[in-house]
Image (tube, rainbow, N blue to C red; front, side, top):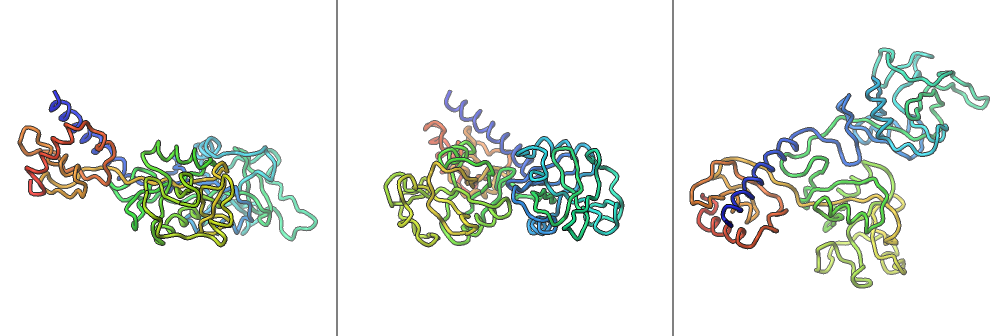
Length: 370
């Protein structure tokens, strides 16, 4: 009975890994970006208010530009997926890539010479309203949901960016997660504002935990991920909830060797309730002790996923149980399936003891030369 159960579990894992590889091979959007089905591009909104030209520069830093809306499908996607805060007031509108800065009343998208054919102007727009104090007219465009308005390019508004998808390394991270080369882990940025405890719970639901930073390269990776999304702080896993002034990473009991504390941290600021840590306070890559009940975006970390590679006798997995599974022949014969490469144990470590022991026996019989 146990052997039959093991066979069924292994078969299910093989099928699951096959489907994961197919999904991971697709182009994905960076954490914090949403893929628009109509254009195939990745979009992101920013609550940070700035001028149209400065907004464009920010989008270009992220590898894209201000968003282009070519059809009603794209308009509906943005209307549905962007978090529209406030009401239809100029203060809450977003800059997009449409403009008539070159020829008055000839509206073009950035880097295009043809006049835009799809528009969703609000009634009475564009009106090129000229303020008495302004040197220019309204040559840029803002939107609120599905209503478009011409606006002064020099006004400070929120904005929407767009960029092409980027492929994640196949078989190493789940879709939407990105490989941290220095740690070998996968990380994802979450823009939802949550307490440290709730952020940790979200990461655990994804099979991981809040990010761990053990070296300067990982610290730069985390801060770059934060900057490539929106401004502000991000929770990381470091905390002293277990013992005051003894900061530890999730699932780490050893002493913390690498630190990147902001001046005055952690000692001078570690007051009641300030037991958790963020990066990005005052736009710094340094670490700052925060009240765990405060709300912030956060970065999660997992150890990866599984996929098939090579032939049965080409055991490329580094993990012990992954090699055992790759050999898999509970009946003593060689498997014909592709080798399973695992970057982490995942649920393998939760298998019944007898099944794990059976895999160990398989590994000892076939090893890396099976």
